[in-house]
Image (tube, rainbow, N blue to C red):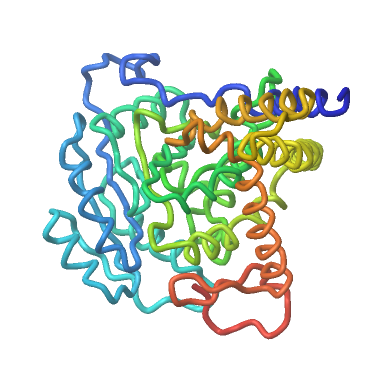
Length: 381
């Protein structure tokens, strides 16, 4: 009981409060009058087979309180009419083919978009994001206040039951960055690729996406280089500012997507924090067994153990509190956390195997997770 209580407390230190992107009037203004002219913002959207997602994003960008200078959709060799949908939505389309050797598809698309952009500020948005009407105003004001790179993890809007399997992935990704830590001065690492904002000079000093052309985690790579250049990186949760729906294509897409990212993400997490996350998640698994017994006893009309019930409900309450800041997870999701934890183990184990093999499949391409391994293909996705 004492050990379980310790890990429960550790969980709170890892994710106590997810900072939300300040509202347009909530942070100090950039130098000069708040009404003074601001630099033009170019929105760059890397897109590969995103015809289904683009209309939502483009409608959101069209209703911004601070309209962008331009919206550039970079078509990464799509086969589903992505370019036509982008043009119909008022975006300018950039063709990102052919893909050069040694580049990931997203890094190349972002690089091409940045090269074609006219604005002094670059905002990179994933095609499946749904921006609130003041997203650009909020990220630009925060970027102007702090300088450097501003990154936002979108609020996860789920519609189908299988999408809840992302619960622990979302939470552990946030824990790994350190942004929600209860410990003052916790080191913040990484960034969130779906929404990145920085000025062109900072982007150039960090080497842009070209400096991390072969990195699967292009967001982590860019953030690391921005910090190394001496500029700050600020990360926020996107509740009330920007949303997304991850992997609507089914469980296979969910497993492939998280497998592509997660083993590499673990490698970028500071070792002490990683060990604490592993220990806390191990406690979730252990208490999940108690939770299953409680649920079985409740369904069967038996009398659950009082100790098991307390442990199970304590972790369920903790997870409900954490998940509610990250997506539309419900109390039911929290009560079923043993099943979600088991799903995490299965997918993460698969990601470790794929990382060891050195490659995964994603959107019809082979993505190298370890370029140092032999038999490297000529092109990466």
